[in-house]
Amino acid sequence: MKNVRRTQAPTQDLQVLKVSAKTGISGSQFIQSCLLRPGLTLAISTPAPKSPLQASFDIDDAPIQFGFTYAGKSRCAYSGGSLRNSAHEMHQGSNAIFHLPKTKGTIKQPPFNPACTIGITASPEFLYDYLADELGRLPDKFLRVLEGGKGTPLAWFGACHPAKNALLGQILHCPYRDGLRKLFLESKVLELLAIQINDYIKAHTCQCPAKLALCPSDVERIRHARDILVSDLENPPNIPELAALVGVNEKKLKIGFRQVFETSIFGYFREYRMQKAHEFLQQGNANVTETAYAVGYQSLSHFSHAFRERFGILPKAFLTSQRHLRHSK
View 1 (cartoon, one colour):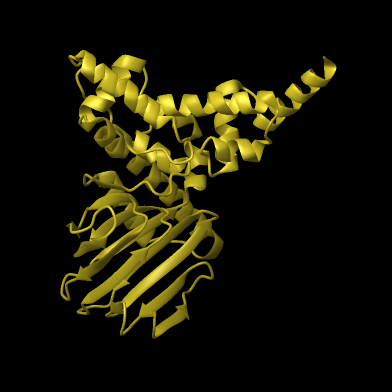
View 2 (cartoon, rainbow, N blue to C red):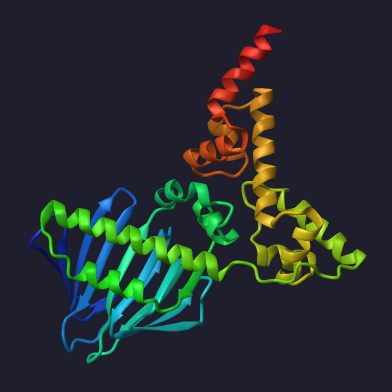
């Protein structure tokens, strides 16, 4: 990015950037960016008055992004990735959750009604620590992202919510400076994330009928889907891919899977991984890190937490206990 001028904001934790680039970004944009804590960043974007903005983006390894439009409007068009050849408009009150790896596109804002936006970027590791006790309520796709599924795309657009708008206003008009400002912003950002994630969970709560009429061939396909799902723990297919592989639609696969196996697709996959990890550690043929990677976890901390939640003991402690048990025989 060329011709970027950076000036210090009144507080040390915030910076103001004025961007005027010939390639990638055109127009003037003021961005206040604040690292609230490791894994959590707040960015407030305010275009210069009467200045149209066009910015191209190319996302590789995506974090989880929570976007909110406080005023104005913008249009985002995608040229690569899971949303390729689609577009959406954001206006006052619009809000969304994104995880879009390998995605390209362009954002445009009109000159006389540019968007004032608030963006919150959170790492999966940061959110996992807060949501560890909520894993059973999380939609499968969001849970897969939290547990290290870097290639899992996610795009969800939430409804306008008075509580969200009130928090956005408080963030934009923070009455404090320096350390108190950062403390205030962090508290409001966490509250905003709680509301947004709760809305996302409620929107994805299954309202499906309790039962589907499954013929023998449907059951056979669903069992085949189970076999495919657990055949490669490091690179499992997502639900659309799995449905295509066995020749059923996603709705029938998800509901039918729960009927046949009495758990969700991701719930089955997660339990299978835990059982394989338990088996590996019990046999003593791999250490904790090797076991975590073997069953598809990219984050050792996520694996340790999931193992302890399932078996009531940390994997390292379990491995040590099994070694002592073998040596005592």
